[in-house]
Image 1 (cartoon, helix red, strand yellow):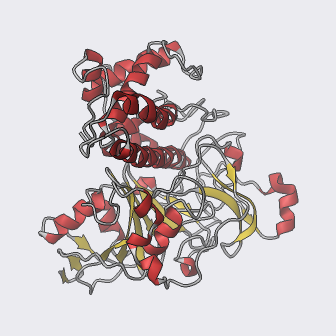
Image 2 (tube, rainbow, N blue to C red):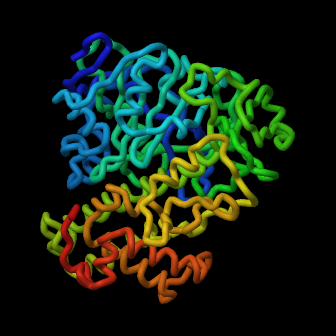
Image 3 (cartoon, one colour):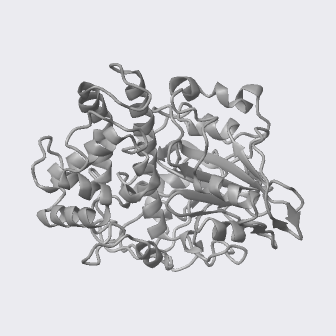
Length: 482
C-alpha cells in the first residue's frame, strides 16, 4: 500500500499498455548481442503511440513461446532481483519512497543495490518515452550485475530490465505515482516485440539491445546508415553514438557526445568528434540527475556484461530445448553422452570464447573514468588468496586485467544446465593448461592462463570441484539448473 508516498507492498501482473523498454537504434538502455559489429539496413523506429495490439498484449503470442516451450517464459516463476523486491514489498520487508522530481528512482536504486556511480546518459528518442528524451534531457541508465534501470525526466514510468537466472531478460515498468497500490508491472508487448530478437536479428530469445548511430538535435536518427549493434568487438571509433561520454581516453576516438546539426556534416565526421570530457558542462544540465557524469568505464563494462548475458540466455534456451527433445532426454535433463558431448558442445563453445574475450578489440591506450565507478565495480569482486579478482580492471590494453568474465560468478551462469557448465569448466581447464585442441586463444599469455586458473580454483567452488574430479569428468548426467 501507499502511505505518505511510501510503497509498502502488493503487486499485480497486468499485461496492459507497455511503456516499453524497447530501446533501439543503438541508443538503447540496455544492450548488446551482436558478436561483431552489425550494420542493419534500417534502424527500427520507436513506436509513435503506447497503444498495443491484442497480439502484442498476449505473451503466448511471442514467437519464442512456441519455439522454446520448455522455458515457459510467460508463466514460469520469476527469481530475478525485481521479482524478489516485489515479494519483499508485498510482505512489508521493503518499501519505496516517492520523493521530488525523480519519484521512486533514488529509493529504487537503493532497494536494488544499484550505485548511482553507474550512471550513463543516452539522448536518442529510441524508447517509448520519446516525448521526454532530447540531447538537453537525456535518459539516465543505472545498472549492477543483473538489473538495469532507466529514468527519463517527467516520464510516467521508470523502465527496468532484469536478468532472471532461468529466463534471461525480463522487463518491467514502475509507475511514477505515489497514489497507486502496485506500481510495478511486468511487461510483454512492445518490449518483447523488439527484445525477443525476431524484429532485429537471430536468436529468437529475449535479449538486451545496445548500439550506436548518428543523432540530431531533436534526439532522432539523422541517418539509418551507420546505425549498428555494438559489442566489445566493435572498434571504439564506432561506439556510443547517441550517448554522452565522460572520462579520458587520449587520442582514441568514439561517437559519444556527437550531435548532428546537419546531415551534410557527416561528410567530415572527424571534425565532429568530442571526447576527453571531465564533465558535461555546456552539453547538458546534470543538476536534476543523481550523478553528473556518463562514465566511459561504465560504458565499457556494460557492453561486455550485456553481450555475455545475451549469450548466456541463448545458450540456456537452446541447450534446455535440445536436452528436452533429443535422444530420449528426460525432463530433468538426463541425456545421452552423444547429446551432451555433441549438441551441447556446439551450443556452448561460443560462450567459452566470449567469456575469454576472444576477438575483443584491444584498447589503444589508457582510459580513465570521470567518476568512482571503476573503484566501486572492482570493490565488489570475489578475491582469491592473493587478492586478485576477475573484476580487476586494466584499462590500458584491455578493459579487464584478467581476460575471463566475472559473470562466471553470476546467478545466470550458475543456472545453466549442468551439461553446459561442465563443458565450460572442461574447456577452461584445457585452455588455461595450454592444451586446447581447438586453438584460437592466442590472445591469452601464459601469465593470463595461470592467473585465471588460480583465481577460479580459489574463488569458484564448483570449478574447484571439477578440477578435483568431484563433479565427474563427463556430462552424461545433467541436472538442469543444478
